[in-house]
Image (cartoon, rainbow, N blue to C red; front, side, top):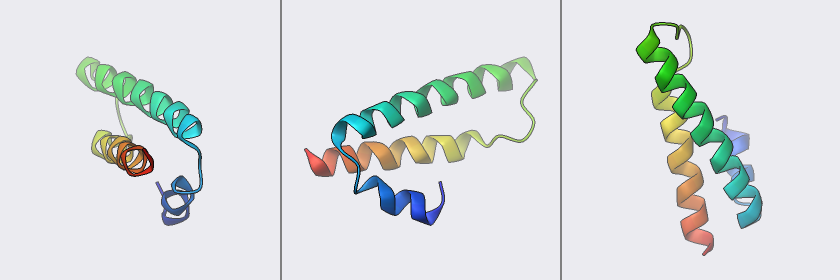
Amino acid sequence: MKTNDIKALHDKTIEELNLQLEVLLVLLAKSRLQKRAGKLKNIHICLLADDVARVKSVIGNKS
């Protein structure tokens, strides 16, 4: 996520954040499966995990 995307997280509603969280979790799961199969090249799994943590933190702060 870029800096502007991180700042935009705080402007979203909890429903929008939950939708984004679902998308990120699916991407993370697919990336982990591809890595185990040896097909993953350039996607950084740790960056996806960091994005999931950011979204969860914003959801926690809003509720």
